[in-house]
Length: 137
Image (cartoon, rainbow, N blue to C red):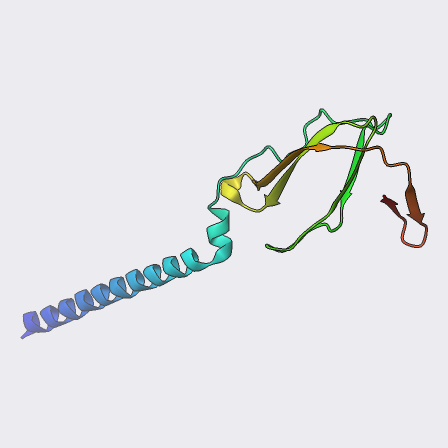
């Protein structure tokens, strides 16, 4: 009788372990499916690059060679953005647009290469002392 009791306990424990394993496998499958349908997870699986980082070879701006700013610091997917650029002397330039995110730890992904564009020297800059801003036209 004692042997029968231990067999019952052992079978119950084995059944509980099997049931727990199945619950864990189902939970992992659901978690994986949800992660794959999450747009952030999907986006962060795109190819990344470190090319977005500004190198030590930057302009000193002693001659105002190229200046520019964007109409917004960030935008949502599908929104538009304007770039205001002036070059001195007038010359062609290129722009690369990067999205910042995880991207396998590289932090940036190239979204679009634009150019070559024809740069112009913009002479008129309007300042707004209230907001401490300058607009280049």
